[in-house]
Image 1 (cartoon, rainbow, N blue to C red):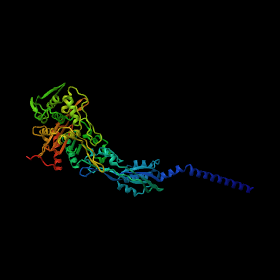
Image 2 (cartoon, rainbow, N blue to C red):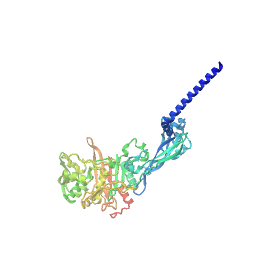
Image 3 (cartoon, helix red, strand yellow):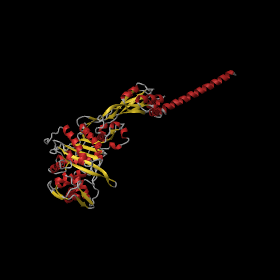
Length: 559
């Protein structure tokens, strides 16, 4: 009896064992066949992960080889939350070493649904190395690059800035992103059971970006920015812009604005004021005022309708349709030559020339010929083409010849005056001299003035800077200066804004054979509004420094 019971139990136990082994065998066969590929992928994902190898971003140099934007060594701190058993402890250590907020690090490490998180992008290599010595489970460290601007605020609005992933977001960084960024590579990181990297297999090497050489001169740029800062402070202005250009090549030596910013502070520095990152010389338009009179006079000279000696009897004011045009200063009716009309910036004289000799068709023709109403093609993003009158009424002929009812950019104005300085040829303004390894960019050129007309205009514009002219504060000892003042009221949604003006001076020096064209424009100055009072002194300071820096010899005897 007992023997039969024992045998039954043994058979039952044997049956259970056989069933168990059969189930295990079936399970093993199922895993090895049906689940094999998916489990292999899961195992591989836990022991390997792909990394993008960042390409070094190209360096941006000024014309003398001074680096303006460079790549600096950094380290990406990476973690695998699935490998971390005590995220609170490891987050506390990482936050303390790297100087991060504990809560943010802890939330990243505690999310075990993810196998890859950035603890910190572009960390200091020194701090990352200190953290690596702690031997935290699941942490890996990858070399990266951080964009740095060694000159700080110098040319910030021109250079722009690059984001966390080293993609250009503004300025030349954005415009030249394709050349600067290169091509990232790919690598596979192999980890052990504790999550530590034991090997890195490079699948594709990174191809570094190309370096770029600019036409900017960092010394001339820094000085222009300093002068603008003083000018804005002195006149309590909203902002100010300056351009320094080589009229014979179209190369821009300085493109400055105030207030500025430091791109090294991205993104925090721009959270409260995105306008700081806008390049006003290229993006903003304004009514130019009397600096636009060279278009009126230049057009009439080119069509042989007038000469610098042609004289007109001009009252203080005239009626044009429903408008009354008058000069800035009260005066009696008097006789003025064309040269004196420019010298004294007579609105009545400019309108008289336009009415008699150009008309709507002629003005539109010469505005377009000088390059207004279309983009210059400068190598910066977001350029505006300006605005020409969309329709002409009876009073338009009284506005446009004196720089009202038309909107331009600073770079358009500087380019037009450069044509007066170089013999009458418009040359495309540019900031990029060349990209290393590529041919220099092809620049557009076109003749806008017949030979000789430019000399007539320069001679007349020299009178503007004389003792009787509106721009006498732009005079530079030892050098002849030719230029024009402009004072324009700012338009608003309901007409011109009371008390809001833009003061401008554009000049060339030495006037006998100009080496430089310098534009200064001051937006909404207070305590003074005229271009000859506000902008001309800033021109003198900027141009004087540049002439010495470039070792341009004087063309006049010192008195």
